[in-house]
Length: 159
Image 1: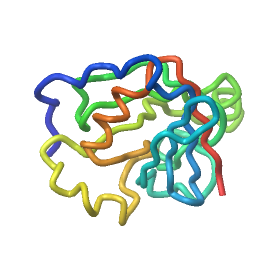
Image 2: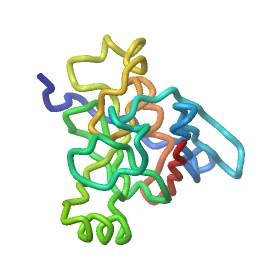
Image 3: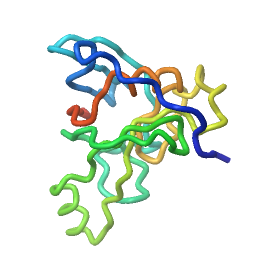
């Protein structure tokens, strides 16, 4: 069972070292941090277990969203090792879900492994185990936390 995170998050990197864009390629299972159009870090990722069925449209569909969003807040004490919130659902996502009579869901994050499960870092990317989030190892999440300020755009590309 996951538990709340202990400890303190890393300090922010110097502004000249921080990313100004995150891109995610679902097809390649990669997330890239960019600055001034150049990749500064790349990560293998795990996603929602139904990531390959298209864009997230409803709570519980276990899909990872696609489109343009922003990192709008962070949680240093989440049940997964650190987390950055992705601004899903957009107004368009809400409208699509409402037309279908569904709740669009939310709380989509970039995060590390569930607290207490960090030893699975080397193999976590072999299966897609999140409910729609983007997961990396705990060490990678600490680096991402320091390199990605709130307000950073994120582009999530589908298949």
